[in-house]
Length: 507
Image (cartoon, rainbow, N blue to C red; front, side, top):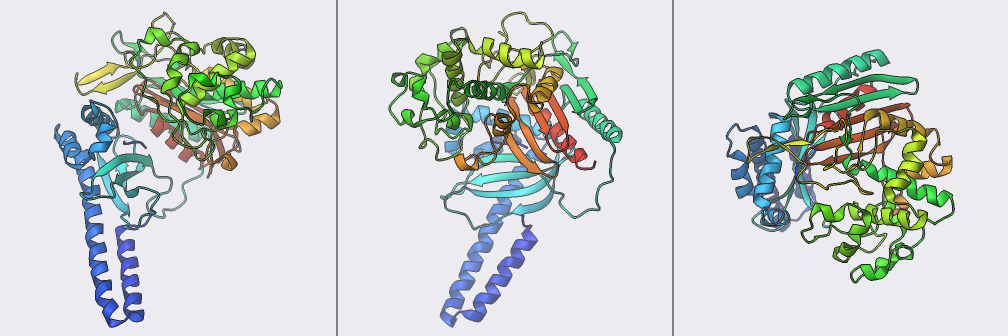
C-alpha cells in the first residue's frame, strides 16, 4: 500500500569500518568468512537498491502500462490475494491513483538499505523523494518478503518530518504571513488538480484563514463552499469516544467494564470476547481483526442494530490488551454500548450531547440516498473509465459510530472549541481522551483521538480517509491553533495538513 536514516554512502562506511575491525580481531580462518559475509551483504544492498529504483522508475514513468508491469513483476502474490478476487486490478488502481496525485517523484537520497532486520518486523527499505505536485518531501518505503525470491509485500509513502540536509533555519512568520503562505499553497494545489475541498485555520481569537476549492458535484459543476458538508470517514470516532466518556462521567458505565456486559456474548464467534474491555475498544487494543462480511445490501445496514447478525464474522486476532490494532468494528461495538446504556439511538445521543452542546448545526449521519442540502460528493480517478468517478456506490449508505458522517469546517471548529474549553467533558476526562495510552499498548492514540508530540508541541485530533474522502482535524494544544481540512478527493488533505504543520513551526 502507498500512503504519505542512513544514506547509502553512510551504510557503505559502516560496512567498511565493520570489515576493518573484523580483520584486526579475527583469526586468518575467520578472515575469509568475513570477506564472504561482506560480499553477501554488498550483494544484498545492491538488490535492495534495485527494488527502490524499480519503484521510483515506475512512479516516474509516463508509460500507461508501467504500473501493471511493476505489480506483475514485483508484488508478492499474498499481497494481491489479500485484496480479494480482484486484487491485481484493485492494487493497480490504487497505485495509479497515488501516482496521479503526487505527480513526478524525484529521488533525493537512499535513506535505509539495511540488510539487518529485527526478526519480529518486516524488512523495510526507504528512499527520500520529492513530489512535483505537493512540493513536499516524502519517504518511499518498501516492505520485502523474507523468503526468496524477494518480493515487495507493501508500498508506503509518508511525509518526511525532517529536511534531507541541514539548511539554514526557516524565516520566522507572524500569523498574517502564515495565513498568506498557506492560502498561496492551497491555491497552487487546486490549480494542479490535487485539492478539492475546504480549509480552516483558527487561533484562540478566531479564524485566520478559510477557503473552498474544487467542485462539490462535478456532473452539475456545483462548487464547494465553506458551508459544504463533507464526509468525515473515521473522524466520527472522536464523537463515539466522547459519548462513552460522558456516560462514564455520569457513572452509567466504567471504562474497565467488559464488553459482554452490554452486548450478548452469544452474538460473537468463539474466542476471548469476554476479555475485551471498553477502554481497549477506545484505544484500539481489543485484538479485533478485520472481518469478512457476507454480501449485504446497503439498505440492510443503516442502523447499528443491523450489524448484530454480522458480529459472528468478527475475528479476534490477538489477546485483548496485548497490542494496538486499528479497528472500525471496535467503534461500532461502542456505538451499541452507547445505545444500550443511554436508551437513545446513537445518532440521537450524539446530536443531543455533542452537536447541540457545541453548536454544530450542520453535522450528522445523513442517508446519502436522501436529500441533504450542500453535500459534497466524493471522487476518485477511475482506471476503467479514465476519468473521475463518484464514490457513492462503494461506501456505506449512512454513517455510524465508526465513521462516515458529515460535517463542515465551521462545525468542527466549534467542536474543537467546545472540547478544549471543557464544555463536553470534565477537564480530567478531556485529558484522558487526548492523552496517549502506552500502558494499554497504545503509544500514539488516546480514547478516540490520535496523539502526537513534535516541533509544534502536543497535537491531537483524527483523520478520515476513504476512496474519494480525505479529512482531518488537528488541534495544536500548546500553540492554540485548530486546523480543519475536508476534501472530496482521495489523499487531498495530506499535503495541506503537512504544509500547515511546517508553517506553524515558523511562528
